[in-house]
Image (cartoon, rainbow, N blue to C red; front, side, top):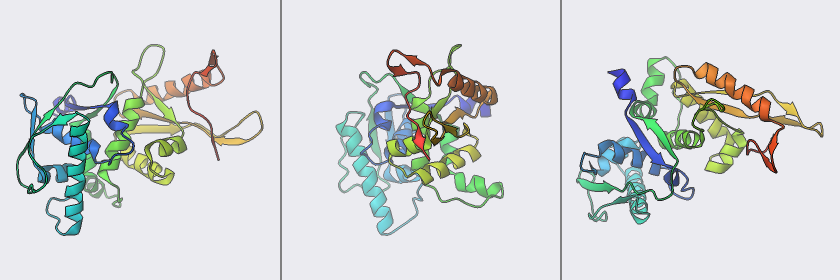
Length: 261
């Protein structure tokens, strides 16, 4: 059963991931809609379901719940305006338990790249507190929506493996933090959680000196935690060392700039 579940993936187009100015709830909301979509292409959901699938308790009351509900409504409206989804129901006076029928539009235009996240991975992220508790580790306060956001960003930028190139994403932590508008310390913290959940594995190359004798923190490599990940990680390091000083015309083989330490 476990192997069958692993084959169930949510596909998130790059355009949704890279809506930098929009609420990070867009990632779990889109995943939730894909998960509840029927064979007719219609997702049947409710604000209660979306609240839970964003990592919040549907039983919470008061001002915080109202804020979460409004954020979810705003994301749904944004996704509709950008034509990722469509629905006719007004969200103004909708109750938490009211059913909402939402059509997912699969026309992504020229967007050919996307991120794949399995239902098991999504479930583990949403239930990370219980997993930490079951393994006797202290609970870490993280936001599941941002964990999904970070994982989606890593996956959408990870190249498809080939005989010439490993299936490894590499970048500087500082660059990732700047790109996704999350501070560097939090990015590092979230990466540790994703590793503990056995979703990704990482390795950071040793610090190095440039030609001006300045020290730099080196690249961090990311691979999916699946069979053969150790070899993929080693191959990734070999690939970087091999191409570090090579250029193709005026363009570097890898398009990341050193991060000063």
